Image (cartoon, rainbow, N blue to C red):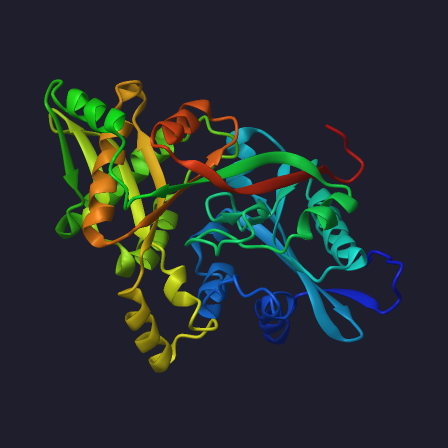
Length: 382
């Protein structure tokens, strides 16, 4: 039964057909009409994420919702149960994602109430988000850093979202930090000296990704990623199919000399991946590719001057040896060589002190914060 609201003009409806899905995908253009820093995603990418061929949905279920006011779409939300997450963490937690709403408490409340109800009927005791569709993809709402456009695979949300979510009964779960570093500046002397000292120990080498051995390199990344992040809050291991799908999406923009591996006696111990911030090109496409869009993208792709370090992982048995420093140094040098003047490093959990300490050593500053919210579901309390 749809939740009741104080505004009789508001109606909530599940997404049931292609027309509804089109409205769901198109809705952000209404919400962000007055936000010039927002970067429109490619509509085809959102359709792929929500589509049946996305391997994520092999272990997850979802329901999409739309809210209409006077017949016009004004809000959207997805409720998601990721069975892998529930089993891995032994926690009956579902997620809400793809959340967008005009600045209206009744609209947001109707969406979140519907998501809670749907999750509760499937045995979930906690709702967390936004995660679109999981914490391995875009997640969180922006709470600091509204004066800068979002980097690749990071959300930009209106400043009124936190108030909407809190008014609907949600509370803070965790903050995610993003750091800014000016890679046009020299590498901090401390980092340079430490990298040289670590590099002289044992049979340590640092190399780039070998694109001619794509599958082999991808398997290494998956194994280390799932091992290194295993104990992190909110982590869910990615299947081979999921990693393959993500890699295929990123492959056209991936620079082999922006992916680094640290090897010890020939065994890969750590890796890092940085990507050119293609949002600087996507913002000119208005969500559409096509022939003209492709030409625009190629033109602006050459002008990109910002990167995002999206992930870094170290095998358990090689931790506390400073291999992160070697990866930071090589990434910094590559950035300067490619003309990437600024770097976003993140996200990093607010309470991940080793990583945050490393960011401070790099003279990085926290310039954006995203927040994950949560709420009890269906009368349960934590």
